[in-house]
Structure formats: C-alpha cells, structure tokens
Length: 221
Ligand code: DX5
Ligand code: ZN
Image (cartoon, rainbow, N blue to C red; front, side, top):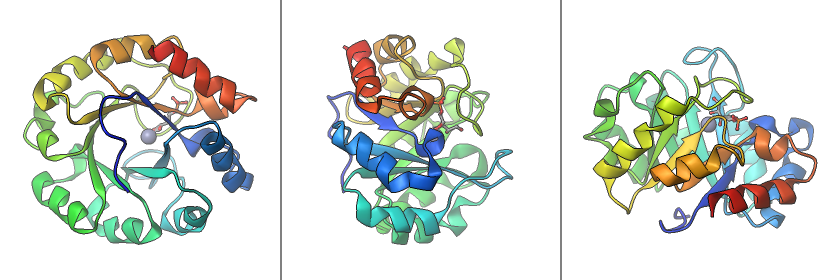
C-alpha cells in the first residue's frame, strides 16, 4: 500500500496508548473514524528503555485492518528485522539514523521488500545527519520527545527542525511528527510544514476517538 499522497494532513493514531487486550477493536474504531493510517511503535528495550510489540503481533492484526501500517522501529539493529516486519504486513518501515551506518543501503533494502521508507531522528540529533538520506525516503519522522514512552510534552524548540527539513525535502515527501501532538500543538507543527501527525494519548487516551480525531483535524485547519 502507498502512503496517502502529500497535500493532505493525515492523523496516524499510535497504538502505544491503545488497550492491547483489544487491539483489533481499537484499530477498527479509528478506521471507522476515517483515518488512513495507524502508527505502530516497536521498541527493543535497548535503543529505548521500553519494550512493546514485534512482527508476531503486527502479523495477527494485519488481516483485521485495511489501514496503512506505519511502523516506527525504535530498535538498535533494524537491519536484522526488516524482512520480518515486511512479512508481517507493514506498509512503511521507519528506522532511526542513529543506529544505521549505511542509511542509503537500508533505504534500498526496505524498498526491495515492497515497503515505503521513513527516516527518523532523535531530538538531540541534528538535521544534518539525515540531509543526504531524507530525499530518498517517502517520509521523515521528526521526534519531538525522547522516544520510549507516550504521554510526554512536545519540545517546541525541537519541533522547529520541521522547517529546515521541509526546505531540504520539498513538498513531495511527508513530514511526520511524533511526541506530544494534541489540538494545542497541532497548529504549530502544521505551520512549520508537518503533514502527518502521530497521536497516541490525544486519540487512544480519549474515550471518544472519533471526536478526538476530529479535534486534531480541526486544529490542523
Ligand atoms: C514514543 C512513540 C510515540 C508515542 C507518542 O516513543 O514513538 O509514537 O506513541 O505518544 P503521545 O502521542 O502520547 O506523545
Ligand atoms: Zn512513534
């Protein structure tokens, strides 16, 4: 599946804040609310101090959803696992620049698996680190928190990286932002040039997910 074409603002609910005991229903609920993608946070307890899901669980939820599966690999050795994630049915694989020595090669390997590619950078990593590889990707993910946990506050000075990245990649590559996105921070990141908004707490942390998604859409307008 291809990423939604640039030109729209997409909300990507992060299942990190969903009820894992009923993941299928949780994803169905945001699908019914009209989102096109869902964000899957993969953590290995090494690159980040937390553990989440892997290919086994993603493979089990895949048949229950038509959404674009946007995987965010917060793992130290993404190169070892990309085949497993592609086999599990993810549509996009985003890897961290901090742990990959030859990012251009990794982009090629992910494309050969039939997946879209995202590159991401931690708050302390300068934009210059992704300058060469970003134009080869479908999406750049800007971390506006230290990865590992949901429910943190967006770091406003870090969000400004979006402006510089938009200058580098032009209008045709999606810029996704992850961490502390809510109806208050949305207008800021959209004005900087982000068009893909990851939201965990602001969607799955709210009882009415359709209303939560609509609030983010409204804030983006
Ligand atoms: C954290 C993850 C995020 C997380 C965001 O490392 O990458 O995707 O779910 O959570 P919120 O939206 O609550 O900041
Ligand atoms: Zn994420």
